[in-house]
Image 1 (tube, rainbow, N blue to C red):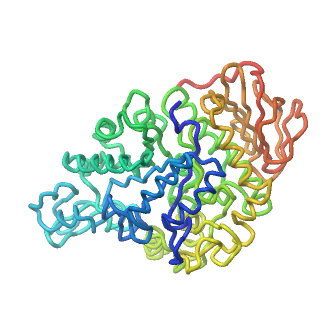
Image 2: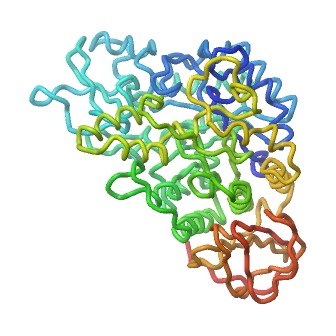
Image 3: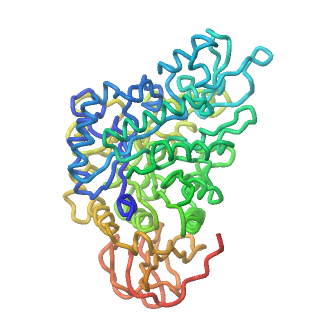
Length: 552
C-alpha cells in the first residue's frame, strides 16, 4: 500500500504552533518540542506551512530564498533536526511548495526588475502600459490591481496576490529547471513530499485571460513528475480552488503522472454568498455539503484519491463553521471528525482541531494581521460597507480566526509563548486547551486518536467503496463503505436538535459498534433517532444491494 493512503496528515502553521524562545512567534524548535503530541495522536505526516526565508508580506507565502529558513522560525540546521526527529517517530515532513510566485525580495525578481535585458527577466510576467495604465483591469485576490508598475523599466508585472508576490512565468524552461533542482534538494534532505500552493495557476495564459487550468498546466505537472517525483517515495498534494469533479482525474488519475491527491474547495465555496464571496457566508446547509462530498467520493471512486479536510490556515475552524461552539462543542467536533475521517481518502487535521478549538474573534480591525482582510476592509469601506458588518464577515470566514496560537494549557500565553504573541490568543484558552482535553477520556483528542488508529492498515476504511444514503435529509448524514462482503456504516446527526428517519434499505445499523460520539447505544430497529450531534459507525456483513450510483 502507498504509505500515505492509510495515514492521517496534520497541518502545522508554524507561526502559531509553539514558540520556543519567548519572542511570540512559533518556530521549528517549538515543533520539535511538541512532536510527541502528534505521536500520541497517531499522525503519519506533517504538512508544514512555509518556513522559508521571507519578508512575511503574506506570512511566509512570499518566499525570498527557497533554500533557507526565516530567522524567526530558526535555521536550516533546525529544519534538518525536525526532519530527523520526526522520522524517528515515523512521521514525515511534507513541505509547502509555493512556486506560482516569489517574494519581490527574491534575488530572481531583484535581477529581473532591474533591467529589461536581465537574464532572468522572462522568469516573471511583464507587460507594457496600455493608454498610460495597466495592461488590463484584472484585480488581485487580496485587493487592488493585479498588475503593478515597476518604475525601473516602466513596465507592469503580474501579482495575483499582493504587490510583494510577483507571479512566475512557468513557460520559461530555465525557471522550471531551477524549481526542479530546488525540489530535489529538499527531497534529498529527507522530506516526505510537497503540498503545492495554488498549483492550478502555473499554466496561466494572461493574454488570453486564463489564470487557472491554463493550456500548459498539466504539461508542467507531468514534467515535474518526470524530473523530480518519479521513482521517489514522496507525496505530491496540490491545492486547486478551480478543480471540479470533471477535472479531478486530470490531476490525480493513476496514469496521468502528475499528483497523488488534491485539495479542492467545493464544500467551502458552497457556503459562500454569490455576490460577496466569503465575506458574507451563507447559512450552513447540510444537504449542499453532503452533495459536494458525495460527488467527489463518486468521482474518485475507482481512480485518483481524495484529500479530506474541514479546515486549514486559510479557513475558519471546523467547529465554528460547521459545528456548535457552545453546549455541543465537544459532541459536534466528534461528529464532524467521524463523517470526514471514515470517507475514502486521506484525512488532514488542522492544528488545534484535535481538541475542538474555535475561531478567535476580533472586535477591531487593528486586531487582525492578515493582509487579505486589511486590504479588503479598506475597499469595503470605500464601497459603503459598514465597518462592523465587514468585521463580522472577517470573523466568520477570514483567515486570522483560525491562525491564532494553539492552546496548550491555561497558563499565561496558553502554553504557546512566554512572550507577547504575534496575534491575539483565544479568550477561551482556560477552558479549551490540550491539557484539559487530553485529561478527559471522552474528550475530542481521545476521539481523534481512535479515529486515526482505525485507518492504519484497515482495508475496508482505506479502500472500501462509498455509497450515500439520506441525501436529502436536512440533519442526518449517512453513508457506507463496502469491501469483500463487509460494510461500514456511518450515521451522524449534524444539527443541534433530535433527528429521525426510517432506516433506508441497504444501510447496516445493527452491526458491531466501531465508534460513537456518545455512550454506546442500543438497537435502532427500523427507525434512526439521534440526539443532537450524535454520530456513530457500525460494522458488519453486507445486508443487501447498495443503492445504484450515478455513472461518472
